[in-house]
Length: 277
Image (tube, rainbow, N blue to C red; front, top):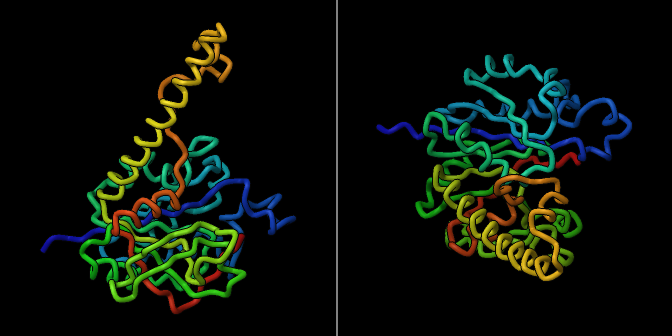
């Protein structure tokens, strides 16, 4: 039979987070905080041992590689029996979905059929095998997110999900941290995507975003020409950015796009789930 291999990606984030952990966070980066005797990021990484036919684990973040050196990726590789690597996004970042796309060649090595994406600051019992089984039960699903019922106040701090239980948990509406409550079912920050389809989706969104930005820049340039300032001078003032910059793209933008296409599904987490901000 065909091997349905998977790759797991950890979104490690960057130095701006972890403010509630002060003063601890002033000397230790959030992904390395000890939780139950292990650096925080190790919990989701080790949970990937539940994934059948795992190819590799890729950690994506903004921290300089030197800062991440105390995380023993060689040890993690030995524990999991697969390569564990850290890749660093450039300062400013691409947003979580943009970051995935930026490293797609690395992530797609070995031709995985599924990509798991886990936010590093989520503590959970990580039902990754069940999540994948649920994803595979819905042939039209391009993405399946772990969701959980929470109280109204908590829900407002997270992505709200409206789903259709009669259609295998198809997501009908997604709202990121809405001011007023949309649903008490929230996005847990743990997903599985079909590959390489998800990169086609993200690529298409990035292209349309870039096209819109180009049109805006063009009209701005036209205005500048009228004001007799050359576009090249403007570009120099912007720090002389050469070549097209990839626009920022967050996961919520992708989810909204997937909802429109009716290919985003959900799986209920009945277990433990907590976010460490």
